[in-house]
Image 1 (cartoon, one colour):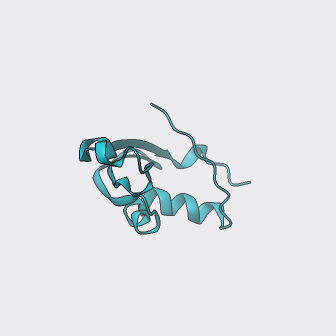
Image 2 (cartoon, one colour):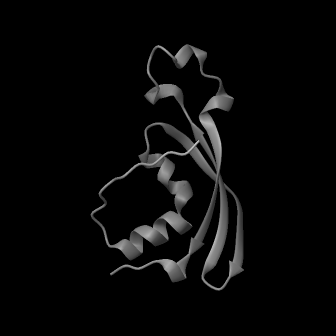
Image 3 (cartoon, rainbow, N blue to C red):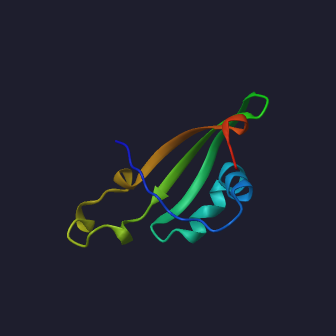
Amino acid sequence: MQFEIREVVRHPHERVYEALRDQMTQLAAHLPGIDRITEREREAIAPGKQRVVTHWQANASTAPRAVRPFLRPSMTQWRDVATWDDEIINFA
């Protein structure tokens, strides 16, 4: 399953990129539907290129009230595998 969310962020692109790449686990405190984000793996695969695996644990608070009783914890968690490549980022 693939999700896409667009959000306007009014901060310097370089700082947002670095924060998402290097401080993802701290983002959970600012997302009401997320209990925690845990970094499971980080690997430098080339200069300026990293592979990061995180585990996300959501809560049912943002799900429609009618489905909340049917949600199991396994349904509100996922593994995110990201490749961060500094070279392809264009901040212009």
